[in-house]
Amino acid sequence: MLIRERLVHGFDSGLVAKEGLIAHGRGETFDYLLGEKTTKNAKKALKAAAQALILAKSPVISVNGNIAALCAKEIVQLAKIVNAKIEVNLFYSTMQRRQSITKLLQKNGAKKIFGLDPKSSRRISGLDSPRRVVDKDGIYVADVVLVPLEDGDRTLALKKAGKKVITFDLNPLSRTAQTADITIVDNVVRGLKELVKEYKKTSKNPKTIPFDNKRNLSEAINEIRKNLARRARHA
Ligand code: PTJ
Image (cartoon, rainbow, N blue to C red; front, side):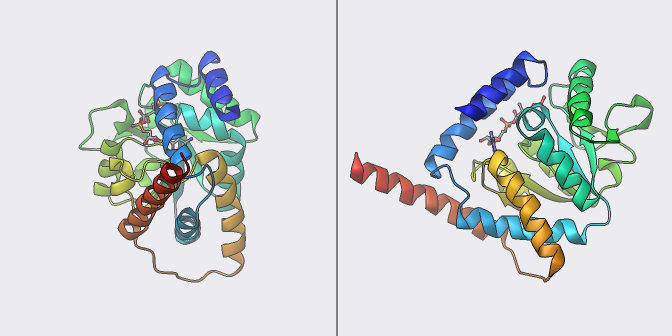
């Protein structure tokens, strides 16, 4: 309920697109089915994500309206410890929303935000939406991109451009979840805090742990099945 209120407030302040409210509703459903907690399965993906960010040479965190409204503080915190760039990249892109999101991130301590300067824009091929426009010094040259609440087309386009894609998506069946290299099936509000913790822990003792995204997603789907069966038994 608190998360929903933050989204509504974000919408009223011009950060969140109205479609972002619908996306949030879909997320709430899956969060309910997952038991509204960070599962063991999500923890595995969080470890893999921390590892990928440690090994990254030029990591970028992509921010949209929902993420800004829900996790501006954690985004800035993560970017600082990872030494990642932050880029505002919107599906329903307007200069006004890009500026509002940038201001909020700055208010939370971010210094440089990419994605505002039209002179540094480049295009990712194979994409029709405004999300194809990226910064030449940001996502365009990134090797690892964290894209929470992404759309499937851009995930695919980023992968085709040779980038490692990490995403947060509560729906393990979504195209983004299925296409990304590392999918954290968790609410981004809980998950980003966990990623900050996991990064700090892993960077003290880095080691390579094998990670299979498809397999991890199947486990997340099984988790939902089990929860549904449990709830049906108690109904
Ligand atoms: O701010 P903009 O203009 O870039 O628009 C952003 C939205 C979110 C509208 C756009 O990216 C979009 O339409 O996303 P989708 O395709 O609806 O995908 C959103 C996915 O995120 C869905 O699979 C939801 O289940 C999931 N989701 C929603 N809220 C959360 C979430 N996953 C993790 N944490 C959440 N809080």
